[in-house]
Image (cartoon, rainbow, N blue to C red):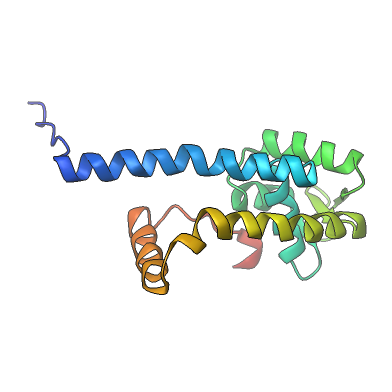
Length: 158
């Protein structure tokens, strides 16, 4: 016997449609800013940013794909473009020759550092400048409840 559909009530429907609006428009706005100001798309910026956060500026490709929520194929194409621009190098993992690491170059670090200023300004403008301190805390609480298991974990950092 089929389960009965639990339709959204008016309040849930309104909240859902607002969430969908944010999920569609905010990434597009942030992507446009990054393309205009830094000639990067959001995924490229994320890849460079994750590498910049690593103590050695180095991370295995599989782990980088997990952390950036991308397929290994997508990441490979992006890293190839970033490598051609001189922002990233690929090298064999010294501990396991079967694995490949992505390494952020000094030029890549400079690129992501410069891009961060405009990106943070856009995030602040689109999100945080519109909220009170209490609303930021509420937003954090709500977002962590929506999909608590969705945050990827990096095997190399466990």
